[in-house]
Image (cartoon, rainbow, N blue to C red; front, side, top):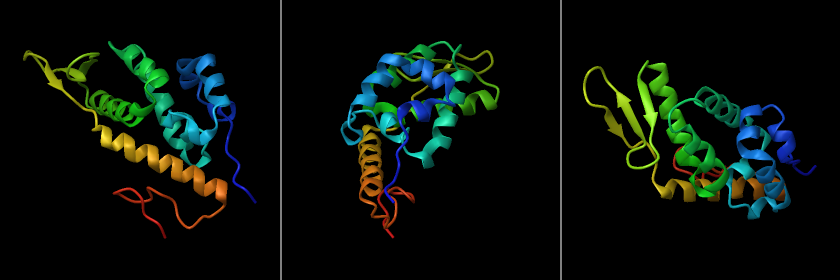
Length: 168
């Protein structure tokens, strides 16, 4: 039986914040692009059922940080920077950690990603993003996940361990 990918509408049905951030134009455009040809790893991973927990976390974080100074940068990048998805996830995870630890912070559009308030000291400036080589690996991994499911050749999933492409 062939693997059934989710449509973007199905994938986003329980992700109200992500759906709103992406917008109808983005969803319609990406729905018309063949799955393997999309420049957005988010558009590809949304269609893989087994990754829905990652998208639920993304939806929650976007909702939690919608009022953070600079949050509009994250929202704009989701719609416009297809290759920067992993970096954006890293920034949101770091913001989540800061919030859990009780630090006040601002997300910056230019320069270091975060300005973190620490008592009476000047703000600590932190760059939290991963290098672009990670985006390249992510891009390849998601395309391999899709190819495996299209072909029905389930000899293992790429990215099943640290370091990228591990095959059983």
